[in-house]
Length: 177
Image 1 (cartoon, rainbow, N blue to C red):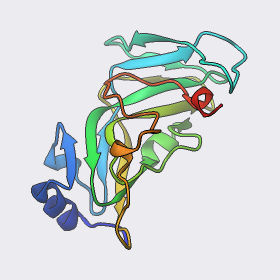
Image 2 (cartoon, rainbow, N blue to C red; image 1 turned 180 degrees about the vertical axis):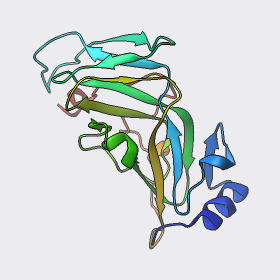
Image 3 (cartoon, rainbow, N blue to C red; image 1 turned 90 degrees about the vertical axis):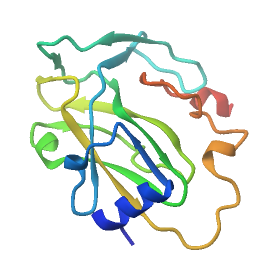
């Protein structure tokens, strides 16, 4: 079951959902709009290696925006820091963003119960498109769970993305080997 706006507000008041900064105008009927943070990153190497720590270069989106190009994987980040202690958060693209040919995640749209961080976005485009810091980029949808969670994501010893950072985070797949 997906939480409605009323339920999202109740969970925020109860502290089981945290969104910082929070703006009531971003609350949809059953989602919350999040925005593109000011930092983007690209990988330094043209060929990525799943067994290697692939390094990234970060840069700030200028006030006049930045043109994303096809065939480049950009790592972005949400402006919002979130915590989800009882629900499964899903990050989905906004239709207005999709209609510009912007994909905001390749495979990592689902968070875990206990995820407490900014969201790294895996951004790719179909044709060149200019983006801006603080533009609406995605929406969070919250699903209820059945049963108790044994270990929250934020408490897992093998969780690779627990370090709180307002910057995009590169793949940590290499830690699995």
